[in-house]
Length: 183
Image (tube, rainbow, N blue to C red):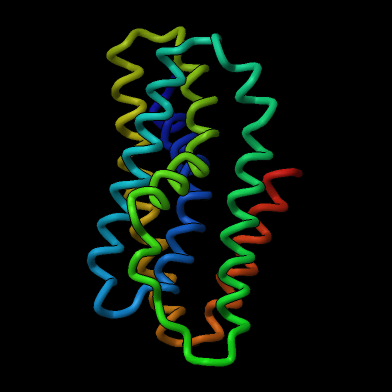
């Protein structure tokens, strides 16, 4: 597998994580920005790496079950997050960012939702030597962390510019992604 192919694969895998990162950037307040930025890049980078690695190590044992349900699981999670954000955006009073929103449970759910496709990609790596699998999966994790960080910064800028209206944008983005997973 060429370096360019791995790069393109990593960029494609990072798109869901970037979308959630944009949402988190929009939702984060000034005093939570640094902490949430770190949580996001670590969560998405580590999950993309780990799921791709697990996929390559598990070979084809679970490919049938994962491929059957991964898009429905992703759809449900993204739709739920989008509807929750829309509900918050429709509230009349000024929205308060829930500092508990990015707790470990939520981070794990978001990490899994955005990395199911990495698990499937990892399955295609199962025929490669382990040292190549390790290099490719680390590259996937690093690229995802970088793309997620960029998404978070972009989302935070939109949040600053658009204020509360940015939550409608974030909700629409998440709902669009949920529908797109079914297509």
